Length: 199
Image 1: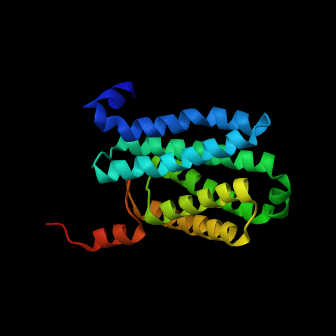
Image 2: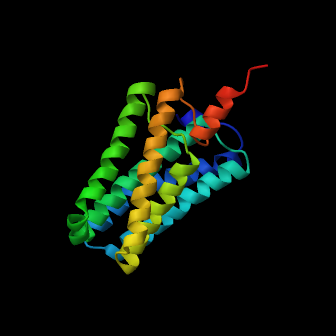
Image 3: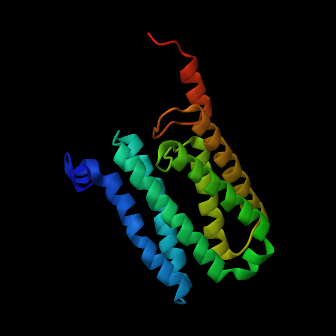
């Protein structure tokens, strides 16, 4: 892993360094959420969510995408999501209790997609579809809104709806994509690619 991370010129590692920094922040986030530091938790979570946008944009804009980077980004995203929702559970238990059914459904379908990916490819998917990026943005906006200003139903249900749609799309992709790939765009592009005859 270290050889892959250190290969090439230093500037090619910028997106991976951002992803790794986000992953390193998760223990601090967890400690802040459960040790009575809600301000630190929400500001650090905001920084992590912005970094998630930044590393992907830099990788795409400067053509710095790699299989290692896609895996690292997915693992960092998953860790921040888990810690973010754990913090939400600890800091906003009344909300979690009132809306437990849509929250549990969202978690269940996400876990189902991850389990299917592990069964199919022996690794977590890193499709980074357009729909999954929109769902991640909606989840981030919802969490930040909840932590800074309180519950807003329209933001919550938008996050739930996009998460469910993105997870269903990724499960369909898992059914049609024979081998693991990163950054596939979405089901539409995979099916379009399959329809184009090989030259």
